Amino acid sequence: MSKPFRVVLAGCGGISAAWLNAVKEMPGVELAGLMDIRVEAARRRRDEFQLARAVAGDDLTAMLRTLKPDVLFDCTIPEAHFATTLLALRHGCHVLGEKPMADSIEHAKKMAAAAKKAGLVYAVMQNRRYQKEIRAYRGLLAGGRLGALTTLNCDFYIGAHFGGFRDGMKHVLLLDMAIHTFDAARFISGADPVSVFCREWNPPGSWYAHGASAMAVFEMSGGIVYNYRGSWCSEGLNTSWECDWRATCARGSAAWNGGGLFRAERVVRGGGFLSKCEDVPVKVPPGAKQGGHKGCIADFLDCLRKGRAPETACQDNIKSLAMVFGAIESAGAGRPVKIRA
Ligand SMILES: NC(=O)c1ccc[n+]([C@@H]2O[C@H](COP(=O)([O-])OP(=O)(O)OC[C@H]3O[C@@H](n4cnc5c(N)ncnc54)[C@H](O)[C@@H]3O)[C@@H](O)[C@H]2O)c1
Image 1 (cartoon, protein in one colour):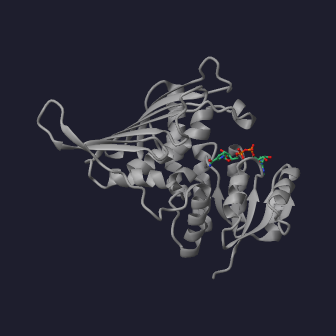
Image 2: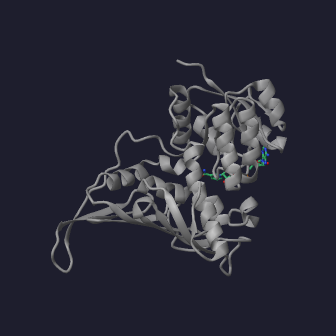
Image 3: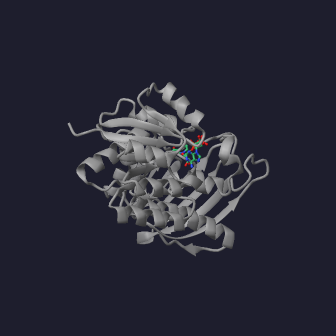
């Protein structure tokens, strides 16, 4: 068995519990430190997760210097990802950081360049692509039974009352949530973004300060069109967090509710006004990857051990972030814009 990775986790707020739960019984992880600018938050997590041997502190530079971790888990707020990641890379740490990768494309490019220059891995937590159902949906579309994918639609409608930093955040839906969905769209379609036309607004009755709703049409590589409709202030008839999806392919269609429900049909006889179709079963493969945070962290550590690039490596994930900033730019300009990552 190889030596365990020494890990420091920065940012001991809400999401850090998902990370600490995920690594609780994960072999090969030694939690050396917990850091937060509010030291009481770091101490609380240390006590709650019974990590008596972990140092709790509020000075990341000092902790990186003295604890010499191999890996930093960055669970800080989006505006702190840039500085936190660059600091960890300067101290020779690989980084797995929460989404969104950064608060601007310029910052994200600098982070990717710094990781490359340091010869270290920086990857992003995209826990939703580790769900076994999304892999089954992607597998169906990639398998060719429905013909080539031409159009991908998804709806995200959840009335989420968080409180906290999201309430006052600009572009809250696009920046904080749609990054998951756009990354899932790239994963499901196997295509990369080319351009986008987006309308973003804050509907009457929204409890957010800005941008709780958005609709965006993306042109993807291979001529695929991807449509996104979403709202974080929509009460009733909530979709799943993973969205309701519909894929139109050359010889059939497939729907997925983001959970365990799939429906797919393919043409068995054409030539009439409506083609005759048959159901296509969708199977979630047994032994699929572990889901969520646990799956993403385990895969990241396995990549470090084996020298593989994680599928959410910053060099790839920046394309999902570019969809977010492209949508924001388009909404501001009121016209379609090219997407550059
Ligand atoms: N992957 C997911 O499903 C998922 C879900 C929720 C949140 N997130 C992401 O996780 C990140 C944190 O979100 P949260 O909900 O835990 O927020 P939060 O406000 O609950 O916690 C953030 C913590 O970071 C600390 N912090 C702020 N700046 C810091 C800095 N420079 N150094 C160290 N600590 C700092 C704060 O004191 C706070 O304790 C965000 O990027 C968010 O988008 C991801």
